[in-house]
Amino acid sequence: MMENTRERQLPVRLPPYLDELLSSWIGRHASFYAVPPLVMLRHCLPEASSLRAADLHLSSDQEIRLANMFATDPAVVHRITFANVAQSLRRLITTRPTHYCTNCSPAGAEPAPILRNQLLGWRITCPACGNQLRVAGEREFPSPFQQYGVGTRSAFPDTLSPNEA
Ligand SMILES: [Zn+2]
Image (cartoon, rainbow, N blue to C red; front, side, top):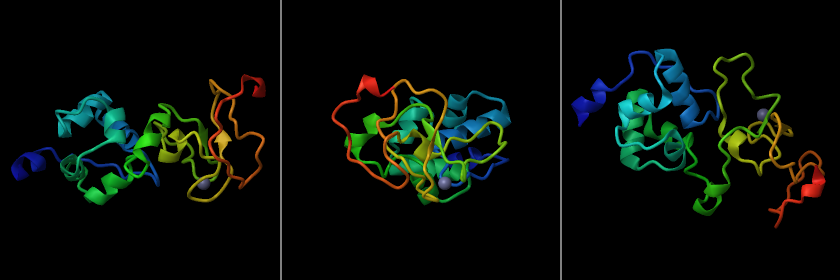
């Protein structure tokens, strides 16, 4: 396995942004190498079904293999997945960014990296700087947190009211 993982190490590696999500990091490498993102992931993990699945769950063996591809520490790979989000909450993780932090979002990066917290729709403040997050683009549902000010936290609402649009 050692020889195999060494062969899969990328000759050019891009550093991750602070709090960048694994699939985003892989996607930026795919863009750099001009291959589809899933090809980039499967270069390392041939058994991987999707980038989303890799964000949500990796075995420790897969974390080690990805870390080898990026010549980094498995703990780094672990940190940029949703491994620290409770299993019961993972179904609430969105598939596209719902908000961004005006302080911490890397400006002008192309392709723009996706940070972990951008897919956690229940966050209203940035985990890095505490700034209130700005809504990105148009949401399918209005944020139930709009009425709350900076730094206020709320438990999950039972329902999303369509009247809050
Ligand atoms: Zn921030």
